[in-house]
Image: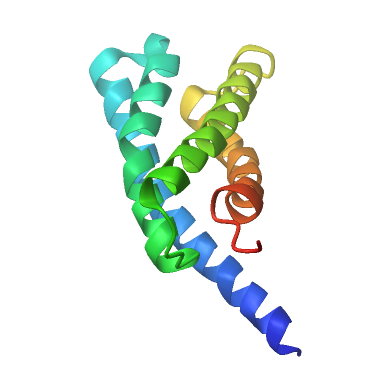
Length: 133
């Protein structure tokens, strides 16, 4: 295997590891907010869990995965844009899964997470933490 391919595999493995950690944090927060506010408020619970887990995710992605030395504020703004797109995909897919496919809310969120994760990786790699200049 070439060194470039090995480096890409390492990057993806780090992203997946950090992503799993952040997904667990986010899902636990989502579950907590659902338990506190009720299942009928699943969109508000989704927003609250996304809001609180986003900062943790940014720090882990910047320091562990992409290891960039760039401007924290500029990268955070780009991450917020990426997360906003990811959030939109998550909210829309969750709504479709719950309303049209009649899945339970928590199962629907697990399915939606997969779509959101793929989108976010691409946006982070090629937009938020893009090192090629």
